[in-house]
Length: 174
Image (cartoon, rainbow, N blue to C red; front, side, top):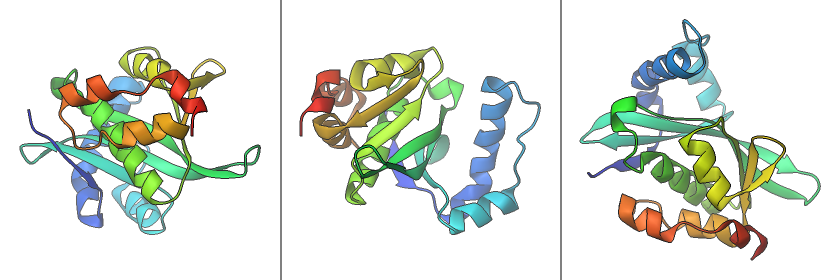
């Protein structure tokens, strides 16, 4: 299966709202998305969030949204993944890993040094547990050599991504 990663542009936001609606209904037990296309467009244009998209055969099938954060304890800029979603018929094909790798590559290009995310129990939590350092019950940090290794997998095949995943210990290496 081939896929394409891309940073969302203003033109991508309207079709993205269909996936956001599916995400909140199926995974957050919400009847309806609480946002609007207009507000999403405004916040995206203001730079409050960035969104990585994944497409298969031209069809939008997943997204990962993140925002810039700052770690005062290490005086480091990073990013936190707010949401990560792959349409159910396209799951278990490595697209979640592809999205995280794409986000990692993008934040490294921007000079950021860590990626933080939260995961509810399931496949995302298993991935985060394998490659990141956990703080508390469900917050994970990815940094150092682990972040660079994951970023290097952006655009690779699912098989190459699985073979090249960083280890948790790589978070402590530069």
